[in-house]
Length: 406
Image (cartoon, rainbow, N blue to C red):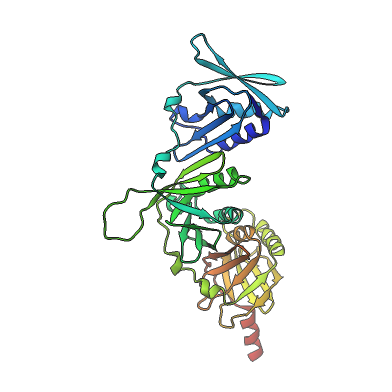
């Protein structure tokens, strides 16, 4: 059979995103090939994620087998021709003994024929499912990639290693947190009938696989309904994304997110803010962090005075940096706290994921959370960083006023 090299390589590459490198179940280390006269379908799974993709072929034949995915990718990476020829080799009993790939050079891959042991996509679990409607895939995928920085590793805290999708009356909220910081995005780019949490690794794989493919359907598999007086919807257990030639399924995490609505007040955030140029701010943050290279936490004092933000790092008695950056007040709140201590590394990660940067200063004590906002046409991103307690923190404005009084 004849197959486009680029399409074949892309399909195998997507499969290898979730094919386990090491596994106690040997069959999971292979890709399953299901071939027909006009198509070839590749399937893979790590039991938490499932993926299948079909590519068109010419002069195909009917067969199923398992091939080592990493070895197949090594072959395809070294092929320069636009088409590859794939031939099935059989013994005298018609049992498949290998796959021969020809394109200038000839490669032979060993196969496994225990295809009945390979786990298939659990489609039956989605027969009675809740639908997720994607209204703007480009915006939704952009949001999903932007919020990943404030998740934890699964081996550190499984509950906060995912992305929460929660439907409100007129918008969807996409949320991540690692306890020290919180990201909430409000958008109308999608809507769901049930809240769910996708593992962060699944979000990475999903947005890579479907970056150039239009998602046609999204379904949620839910736990079997039990007769109860509660109106609470059943918990979602898996999610399925479908395109014209691909299918991806991921298991979901249990929703153990804190009540983030009690922490972040979007109404307050929208009242006043300071706009800051993103590029020069990132350059300043990088310089400050590089100066204190080797420190696990780089703390700094942020002091907002009129149209200038003063930043002073706290690296000990003999190492410190002071710098400033222009800011533009928008409907400035005179009662807001205008000096706070922050972890610069947390701030740098947040600003790096944003398209524009605004800082919101909230009324109250000096240890009130620090808000960043990214205002885009298709969404609003709100990021909250918990402040650091820094000894002898003192505002320049307060010091100047005290000096003038004396």
